[in-house]
Amino acid sequence: MSRDRIEEMAYHCLVTGHDFAKAIELLELPIKPSFDLSYRSLLGKLKNGDILGKSDLFTVDQIGDILRAEMNATRTGYGDRAFECYTDEDVIFDRDLELMRRAAVCYRCLMSASRALRDLSNARRWVCSLEARE
Image (cartoon, rainbow, N blue to C red; front, side):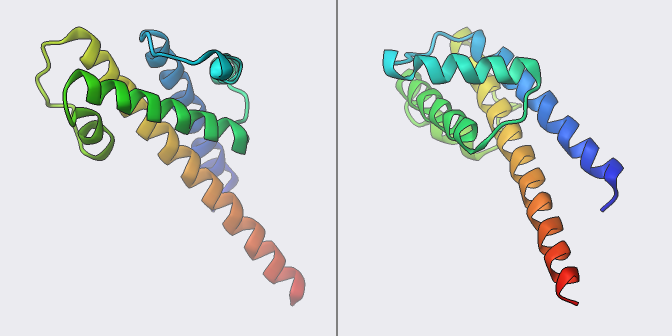
């Protein structure tokens, strides 16, 4: 895999992170006070294009859980659907639910991009360790 391809994947992670932060900020998610510092820190990192560590991705997952629960509370089962299926063609007449649906799409894109970049990084380390043994 070329360095250019890795940079493209990293760039995709940054863009999807920005998109997720923007989408989440449009919502009024019920963030517990004990989670607020992690939440605000993550949003700052996403906006700044900082590299996300494991704890940051855990925070993204927690936000995803909150988002899914809010969507399910708004329309029974829709949060589960939005996190599992393609929903871009769903017709939604509830503005808040549509904003949440868009945030769920951003969440899925960010997690997919981060997973792909992490997997590529792990594969490169593995190849390097194999080459070092030879």
